[in-house]
Structure formats: C-alpha cells, structure tokens
Amino acid sequence: MFQRFPRHDGYDDPQLANFYGLALPFVKRGVPVATVHLENLAYPEALADTKVLLMTYSNMKPQEEASHEALARWVRRGGTLVYCGRDDDPFQGVAEWWNSGDKAFAAPADHLFGLLGIGAAPAEGTYACGKGKVCVLRQDPKEFVLTQGGDARLVGSVRDLYEELCGDGALEFKNHFRLSRGMYELVSVMEESVGTEPCTVEGTLIDLFDPQLPVRASVSVAPGEQALLIDAARVTGGRPQVLAAAYRAENEKRTRNTYSYAAKAPIGTTGVSRVRLPQRPARLFVDGRAEETPDSAWDEASRTFLLTLENNPDGVEVRFEW
Image 1 (tube, one colour):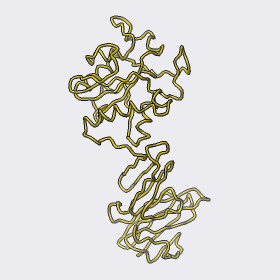
Image 2 (tube, helix red, strand yellow):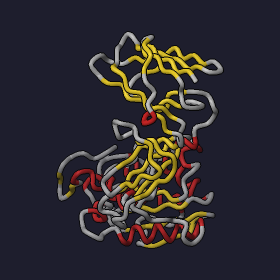
Image 3 (cartoon, helix red, strand yellow):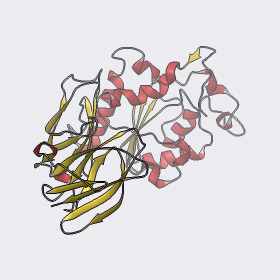
Image 4 (cartoon, one colour):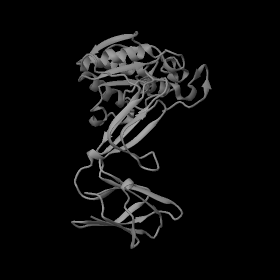
C-alpha cells in the first residue's frame, strides 16, 4: 500500500524520495539494484539472487503478515536485511492488521522485528538472526538523498555487510554501467557520480547510436552519455546476415556465394545498414539494378558492407554476390 498523499500531519515524500533514497545512492555509484515486491516473497525465487535486501515502511505499509513470515525465514537462512525508517509517520497508526485483533504493534515493522527475534522497536544497530543479519538504520530513506552527502551511513553500512558476505573489495563503485549481451555492448556513464572519467570500450564496434553506423576500434562514452554497440568480433556463426539496419530484412536466402533479402520500411525514409558477409562482395543488386561496391563501403575488420538505400514498405530486393 503506497502512500501517495502529498502531505499529511507532518508526513511528506517529495518526488518519491523514500524510494529513491534506497536506490539512487547505489545506482549513482554504479551498483546494480533491483526491486522486490513484498507480495512475492512467498515464492522462493523472489530473493534467490539477493545478497542484501534494503527495505522501508516510510512510504508504504504491508498488506498482510505472511510477507513478514517469508522475509524472516529468508534472513534466518542467511539473508542480510537492512531496514531504514523512523517509523513515526502518521500512516503507521492506521487501523490495520498489525494493530487489530490480537496484535497491538505501534508500527508494522515491529511485527517483523518480533519474528526476527530482536524485539519491537529495536535501536539502531546490527543484529544476528539465525544464519543472517538485520541492520536497523533509524533514518527515513528520503534523508539519504534530500541532503548532500546524507547517504554516507547507508552506503557504508551496506558495503560492510556485503563485503562481510562476499569478501573485501567485492562491492565496486564506479561512474558507469556496462552490460554485455551476446554481440551487444551497452554503456551508460552517469553524472553526479564517483568520478568524471569516460568509459572506453574497445573492439570491432558498430555504433548503433550513429545514423551512419560507423565501425570503430574504440568508443569513449562521457558522463551523461550512453552507447549501444555491436562488437562484430562477437558475432557467432559465419553465415551472412544483417547486423544493423533502418529496415526489416525479410525472405532471407543464402547460397554458397550469394545472400539476398527484401528490405521493408516506411516510404520516404533512408535505410542505412551494416551487412555481414564472408568476404567483400563482387556484385550488388538493388531491385535488380547493379550497384557499385566502393572500397569505402567495405570494412575488413568487421567484414561488413555499409549499404544505403531508399526504403519502401513493399520491399526493396537486395542481393550480394561474391
């Protein structure tokens, strides 16, 4: 149950700061984070890959106590939980399951802390719980991001807990994210991070954010910029194929010395493409017309041909021969 009321009885959460207060201190340091839905904790897979879980009830309240039971089991089996919150906002006292019937908790987190064996309203500190640990920080997450430098305690606590699990130096801070997926390389370099240096990628790189699809030996990505690249050296298989194009390639046909397809895209647009071939083409036909194959269009390092044509939704027939 997320609290979206802009301001009530001293409570406010400007720009969802109680959510971003947990996420951004790590995102801005290049640490991957992921959200976990409280309602999914009953599924073992929900926390299967989680080393340290950060949570708060400063901006939401749990719908049912079963979520706490699953979370307590995860911690006792070796999980590490970091709970951030003063638990003093007016929504802590709404008539709900944690203060109704046989329960009289002042805040929903107190029910969780009871299951963890550390008692209701624990003081700030780190507690052992079975094979796991619970770290309580008595600050609302918004305090970590609304004040410059306010996230130091959170980041330091999580770093210490993570490195206790995984070894010294295991939590690496950097100003960028870099992700490799098959032949693709994705890079994002952040502003307001731990450094201002660019991230340099090396390889046989086709720059997908450049409309001319150039091939470069290295790409430098500055803070505030992103890159989406294909590393031609990581293309698997030797078959001819369209690696990148401003059109859809259909009806592909391959023989020992030919590769053909129909290029389809909206009329009035230009289709620029990088086509992977086993060698430089001897002949190129577009809609049956012989076209030139200039040296400048062939890149030997990536074994790609730069083809430019005028798009047509009915299809433009392309045929390479070598």
